[in-house]
Image (cartoon, rainbow, N blue to C red):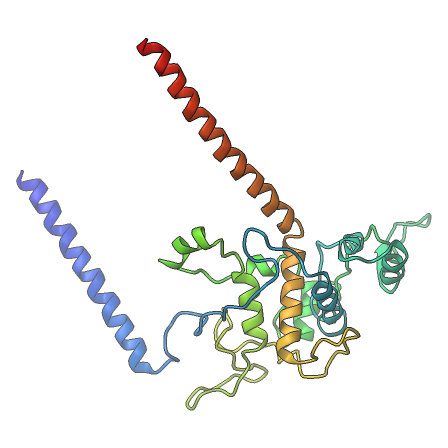
Length: 289
C-alpha cells in the first residue's frame, strides 16, 4: 500500500514539474518577442468557398482550366507535377487533339535507344508532367538552397492540423478543404514584416506559411499577370483561388466521385437499418405468439 502511494506521489510530482517547465518555456518564448506564438502558421488559413466543398460538391471545370494555365505560366518553372499524367487533362474538358498538342510542348527523357543512350522526345498523353530540374541538387542551387515541393499532392500534404475541437466539428460539417484554404491564404498572405522582425536574405514575410514565417519563395502572383479569356477578374485573389482548386484536383481527382459514392453508401445503410428494424420486430412478434 505504501509502495502504491509512493508511486502515485512521484507521478504527481513529475506531472507538476512537467507543467511548470512548459509554462516557463512558453513564458520565456513570449518574453523573447518571437512573433506571437512558437507554433506555425502564425495565422490560421482563411476560410474560402469552393465548388467542391460539402457532400454534393462538384468541380468547376472553368476554374480548373484557369488553374492549369496559372501552373504552366507561373509555377511550372520551379514546381513539378510528377504524379500527374497529361491524359488526366481529358477530365478538364480538353479534347484528344488539345491534350496531344499540350503534351507535345514538353520534352521528356526516354530510352535507351539502339545505341544504349537516353534521348529527349516530345511528350505524349501517356507521359507525366516533366520535372523542371534534373535532380534535387540542381533545384536547390537554383532556389537559394530550398527545393521547391512537388505540386501533385500539395493540397493534401500542406494542410495544417485543425486541432481540438475543430476536427470534431469537421466530421459533421464535412470540412475537408484545409489544403486549398492554406494554399490560398499563403498566396495572398505576403506582407511587410512587423517591426522588430528580421528576415534572412532571400526570404519573405508570410504569417500563413506552415514552415515558419519567412518562406524562400517570392510572391509568385500579381494582378494582370496572366490573361483570362473568359472574362474572370485577373487579380491575385482570383489567381490564388484558381490554382488552389487546381491543386486540390491534382491531389484527389476522384473527390467528386468519392463523395457521390459515399452518399449512396450512407443512403443504403439507412434503408438497410430500417429494414433490419422492421424484420427484427416481425421476428420477435412471431416468437411471442
